[in-house]
Amino acid sequence: MKLQILSMLSSVSVVSANWARNLNYRSPSEHHPSLGISIHKVVRRNDPQSPWNPAKLNFTHGVASGDPYPNSVILWTRVGPTNDNDKSNVTVSGYVRLYNHDTEEYVSVSKAPVCVEYKIATDKGLGDIVDSGRVYTSSDIDYTVKVEAKNLKPYTTYYYQFNVCDSDNKSPVGRTKTVPNVDDEITNVGIAVYSCSNFPFGFFNAYGNPVRKDSVDYVVHLGDYYYEYKNGDYGWGQSIDRVPLPDKEIYTLYDYRKRIATYRTDIDLLASHQRFPWIPVWDDHEVADNTYRDGMAHLNNTEDSFVHEGGISVDQRKMHAVRAYFEWMPIRQVEMDDNLRIWRSFSIGKLVDLIMLDTRNYDRSITDLYWNTDYIHTISQDSGRSLMGSRQENWFYNQLSHSSKRGAMWRIIGSQIIFSRINQSLTLGDENPLNLDAWDGYQANRNRTLSLLYENNIGNNIFLAGDSHASWVSDLVWLGNKPYDSATGEGSIGVEFAGSAVTSPCPYGANISLATANYASRWLVSANEELQWQDLYYRGYYELHISAEEVGAKYFGLPTVVRRNGWEISLANFTVKAGENKLQRPVAGGVVESGSLKGGKTVQTNATVDTTNGTWFVSHENMEML
Ligand SMILES: *[C@@H]1O[C@H](CO)[C@@H](O)[C@H](O)[C@H]1NC(C)=O
Ligand SMILES: *[C@@H]1O[C@H](CO)[C@@H](O)[C@H](O)[C@H]1NC(C)=O
Ligand SMILES: *[C@@H]1O[C@H](CO)[C@@H](O)[C@H](O)[C@H]1NC(C)=O
Ligand SMILES: *[C@@H]1O[C@H](CO)[C@@H](O)[C@H](O)[C@H]1NC(C)=O
Ligand SMILES: *[C@@H]1O[C@H](CO)[C@@H](O)[C@H](O)[C@H]1NC(C)=O
Ligand SMILES: *[C@@H]1O[C@H](CO)[C@@H](O)[C@H](O)[C@H]1NC(C)=O
Ligand SMILES: *[C@@H]1O[C@H](CO)[C@@H](O)[C@H](O)[C@H]1NC(C)=O
Ligand SMILES: *[C@@H]1O[C@H](CO)[C@@H](O)[C@H](O)[C@H]1NC(C)=O
Ligand SMILES: *[C@@H]1O[C@H](CO)[C@@H](O)[C@H](O)[C@H]1NC(C)=O
Image 1 (cartoon, rainbow, N blue to C red):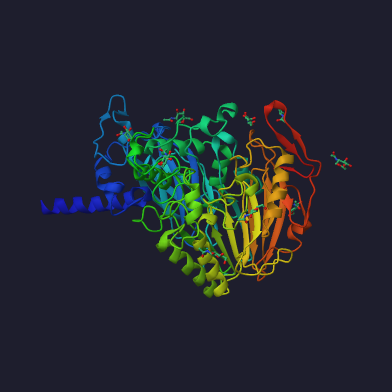
Image 2 (cartoon, rainbow, N blue to C red; image 1 turned 60 degrees about the horizontal axis):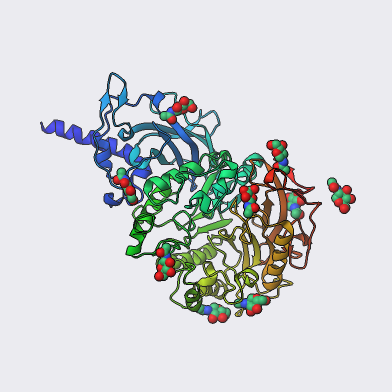
């Protein structure tokens, strides 16, 4: 009797080890199963004697990898008996599955766990395997699989694949790459930077172009990877056959899962995930518009939320969004019991420390919710206001100091929202000319950051930002406190590269003309002394190419996003020399292809706008078909 119990116990713990290896069973709150999954209840539903018929399972959404470390990387896939997403809410019922041996089907099919194997190798043919394992997934986690592949070598390319256990039912083969050891000297690294991909506004051509060029090592996504809106409220999905599901604003766990799953049908997005390791963070729309610690623009944190169409509290909605995000994104949860923490950092050898922030959901003080703009303006200088909360803010400053002390050449800071002060009185009016939902609404937090950098002589800082759907390139300055010469860049402490959207429309008008867009860009550049280049017209992305000597930023625009295509236009190139802490002069070599360049020229090489078919397509002489 005793023996039997012992052997049962040990087999349970072996099983549990395999189960826990699918990180999504432990996420987003490992030691609070009531906030996540009780693995033991799921294990009990498993019956090794009657495994799934592999022919009834599909890899439904490709593969992905992310959060590379020197010796490990996160691998992701989804495999299940249905393309649809799981409809249960957060709790697990401890369901016992029923198997009909006559029809070879599960009566409660969505509840039966699936066994999956993964392997990672140094060669495309997956012969030289360095790590492999067997894990499980189930409806509880929407049939997602997230594992940490280990035993890897620094700065090395790997190939990986999943298969249904003991079968030939295989996923596509993905490629990934680790980062160098913290003290390794590497000569260069390439990163593609994205934000604001809105499915019903267009095709994700921007994700596909670096795949077609094979031009980078890693992808950084600054958030708004998906949007919560109903198509008709924001988006013209009907006209391009891209209506995201469910066809309504999203609130429940099922809604969030379904929405991400719809986005993950875009071929170019799938290709990027399959080819490059991603380092993502969320912005507001992964939960809802203009979220902050306690609320969001269109849902008040009061009992009114239950009479609103979602019929849900702010916290519950946020919990659904966060849970779905961790399930579906190839992101590493660095603190398994802090289910809101996505702020984390990566050392890319001695070359770069990449510091990824959460200026949105973690602990952000109240933001502009549209009905309180004047109030936010009034308090925008309050010293208690923080975009991050004290815990993250302290971590951020320590990261900057530590990075400088360890002698990392560059500090790259991934911020969702624009750091620089931007006067947009042309469109926002003179009353509130600043975007109070960006760092401009949290000036004490920005001052504390700048003070740390200036006081401690921490240089070579590159801020990245998304969120705005437009391109903004600035010297990093402390206006009103440190002298700054706009012509030479003297006085600056770094550079900010803010990028346009993958598809989300221009903030100055969704179907703005090229002439109107460039007029507004000229106004913006003239009204803001540190803003050296601005473009409103183009959807696109940028690539950073980093070496010990310099950081190069290449901005690309897309002639159209309402059709899938591989065209792109080189809009502008920038260089930041190590130790200079400013954009190299003449900025962008003195000439850009679009937008407005301070003290330089915009030469649109015979740009013509074709609006046949009711869409738009801009032709430039120098554009390339990839
Ligand atoms: C799995 O994929 C096959 C081939 O694409 C398809 O015929 C089948 O319907 C899919 N099954 C499920 C459950 O999605
Ligand atoms: C999940 O929660 C939503 C509301 O948030 C509710 O409408 C739905 O019925 C719940 N689903 C289940 C299976 O309990
Ligand atoms: C939230 O509350 C504010 C202030 O009472 C109000 O103006 C706004 O309309 C409310 N929003 C919603 C979605 O109920
Ligand atoms: C913004 O620019 C407008 C127009 O040039 C000017 O009147 C206003 O004072 C500026 N506001 C700020 C905060 O710089
Ligand atoms: C931030 O710094 C600027 C420039 O010195 C100053 O005008 C402003 O009052 C400061 N705001 C806060 C909240 O520290
Ligand atoms: C940017 O640099 C590339 C070469 O790397 C060049 O082909 C392209 O024309 C440049 N773009 C602009 C706008 O100068
Ligand atoms: C572009 O414009 C220049 C100058 O206006 C002209 O000489 C050239 O033929 C044009 N090229 C094309 C392809 O239209
Ligand atoms: C218009 O549609 C036709 C047919 O689909 C296509 O070949 C052409 O490239 C389109 N033109 C533009 C400017 O989108
Ligand atoms: C803007 O362009 C899109 C895509 O071509 C189109 O569906 C939409 O109707 C246009 N909107 C307006 C206001 O013209």
